[in-house]
Image 1 (cartoon, rainbow, N blue to C red):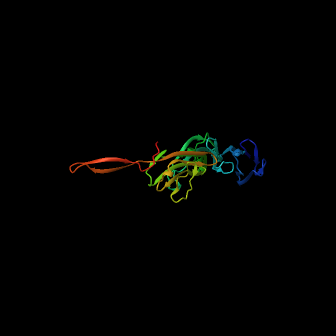
Image 2: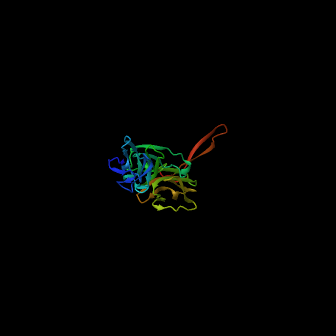
Image 3: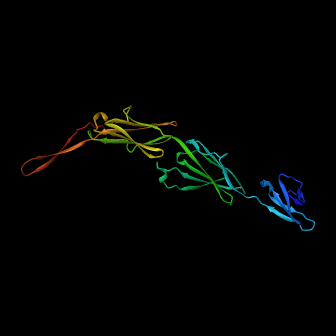
Length: 294
């Protein structure tokens, strides 16, 4: 006779008493019987007993082991949030014994060519299937990896990506730029934003076309979310001087920064002969150009 861990009679000889779909008993020899448990579940674990009138009771321990698995169904997947909002990742993990879950974070690459970068993953203090990110900032964007391990290989992992949308942030190398007339000058403006913003330069409130001949704009992609707008002005004229504005806007917000372009002095040294024995240098300042004071 076989008894279940709950002390319920399973069989008498080869005859199944409890559940014919769950158990089967085969007689191997005169005093040997084999119990087969089908479709094993965690509830089937425990001590099974084989009872015999002629031999001592035998105990068989059934322990269930299931390697870890992370199911996409029920897991959150990639996440896109607006800066300042909370984010939540969840891993739907199976396995027995219950797996230990560890989270790792890999920051977004600072290069447009992400394949050329080396990534460093940081182990987070948070454990368990759920990861809550409070007050998300743009610096928190990147890859979040959920890793599950219960000591029985193979372990499982799932990568999920966080994208943080944020309002444009503009920076200017200089807020005052001076140049001599009839020379070239470049004004630069760096914009960081997600999603990709609309960007442009304007002069005294008038938008500057990007494809002009004498005045034109070059755009450089610095990183995955940062660009530089270079405003090129050839043969600077008096009309080019004044206030320039760099503007950027996306679905999250708008940002502007101003700079002043002014004309510079030029100094020319003229030699004068006072007499045959002495030579003096007299400095004469000639204002070739219009000057806008700081």
